[in-house]
Image 1 (cartoon, rainbow over the protein chains, first blue to last red):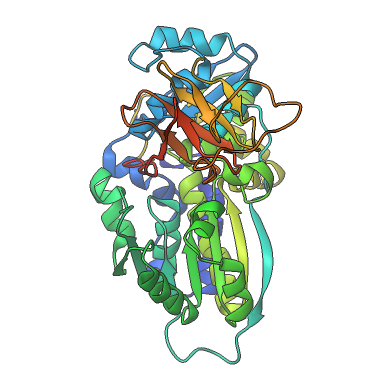
Image 2: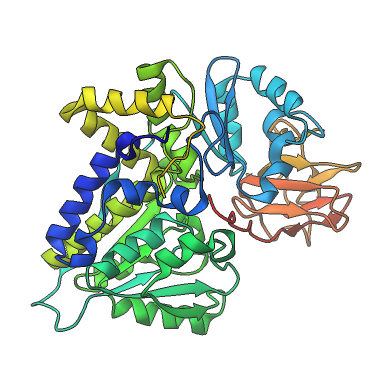
Length: 370
Length: 96
């Protein structure tokens, strides 16, 4: 039997965020979306099943360590070459799952997390606390004089799921969205997941730039100076290396809201940690909540930190658009998941636990009804 | 030397993690790197002081060595005297 559509844990929280967004940016298109469809969108497009210890998309796995569990996302082909350095075992490869399992079982979660994060792997501990809160404003912005006489302009510098979703939601709310395509790092979702890409990309204008070229970098900065919102998801180091100073722009451009989506925030060592949707959900405590409610070890949702963070980012941008005061806002994907969980634990702990129990019973069945 | 090991420069603050290694001597600033910091740091050799960048991966021409810079410094990385080059940025996953 397919799971009840309401079996998607945290869909009710997403639904409430969608209603908040639609209240800020009234539009029939936003009102027509619902939380369950949004969180299950990629699974519906791809026919994914409710996952156990291997994520719905297949890239992330939960592994037992000497003293707990870690989630390791090997989404990028190059990640496999880092496994010997992660474990200290020469010649290790995912093609030999028994050796990999044995290697992880001999190491502590903390050592694997520290080494994996130094290596730039997307890794998370089942029992860790998120490094950053869901949302932090790092630089207060300036107030925009008066109301804009045109649709707000959103510059989308992101790729994959969370960032493009935030920009798409703002587009559904009436904004003009220009997606900047990086000439040397194109959005891999275009070919990797065309159905999801097409939905996220609908209604966006495109501008192709090579940000390693000073002339293109200047064009981007000019575009941003005329914008109301920037959605961006580069690591701080990458932005600096390109010569783009987000904080200076926020201090100079009245009303500019610069929303940065990160895996784990921008403060301290966590600023350099990589995070994708499934591992960030584990870092936010969702798999720990599943274990607590059911005794089972597994993933919850399909890369659920991505759509949840896209929603939160859109909400932060929308409230600043309406208010007219900009700012630099850091959204941390693991923090968003933790905040959603904490909210549900406060408002409806029984409902949260019931949704996690239904989820555990639905493992192996279609994740989203077509 | 084996993957996962950290090596420290004897002439600057550079630290690297070994991703892949073959046969040869890894140097920073022209001086062999070691597992421990020196009591008194030396100076980078001439032509070996272009610096290292945090988070960048350095490779040799044959692909047998790959080092990840986990702390930057003033020395240049080399293997048996031949300067290593920066590997291109990691492509994003096809989906996550």
